[in-house]
Image 1 (tube, helix red, strand yellow):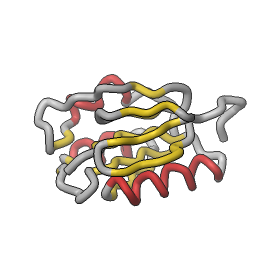
Image 2 (cartoon, helix red, strand yellow):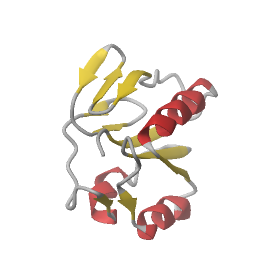
Image 3 (tube, one colour):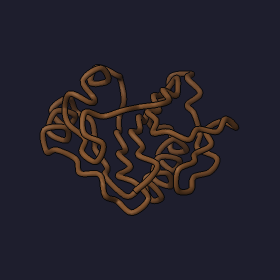
Length: 121
């Protein structure tokens, strides 16, 4: 459960644009239970590596949702999944359109959710 924290909600997503809590973003983002980190960059644009998420590994969450892009072209290294799972966090990987739906559904269920969302490709 969220413990009183009002998690961000995704209002809209389409290729290259996402609206979270009424604010528009045009670059990849990370959503934690308490904030949105905009202009998220990875070491390699279409690959998610452990180093790209290292600063967020200690975030208290139940689920991590990874949006791999509009067409799902971003690859996710198995070490990313394994490290979150080792910490007791469920990991969901989908194209960003599906990831947005899943993220909002999990938030509505009262789960603490973090999302790594690639907005293009």
